[in-house]
Length: 155
Image (cartoon, rainbow, N blue to C red; front, top):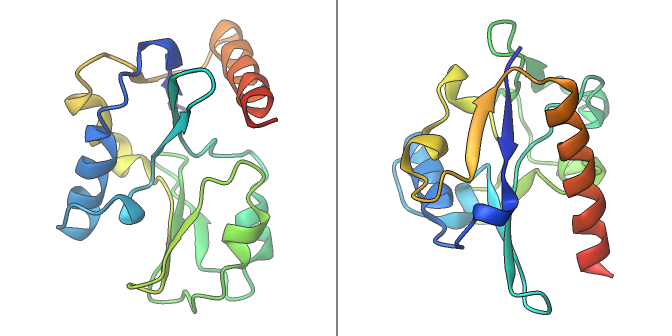
């Protein structure tokens, strides 16, 4: 099972990953339709890409009353079935990492689906910030560290 990881110190804040994501999935360049978000922390002059953690037990899927969020057996990504989704935003509200976004124009939630196992964001990242690989102990520890640091930036 591969996961999307971030080498956050490499990020230059270009937001190309956000744009390619929206284009890949919705055929337009619109940051609110991206499953990845660059969070800018002015105090530390740092840009941090935030991605879905593809939780083992996903609160977003558990809270969905119409069962519109399901695990893709091939990629292990949690995906939204827009045919079932009613736009209630419960998934947006419950995500502990804030990685499900709601586009108010399209009236739909948006999250990373790992592009069917071939993430486009990695292909266009000029600073090699993003990578898609099998998790190992070191990478998982790094992910936990980044999440902890991100919480510290917000304070």
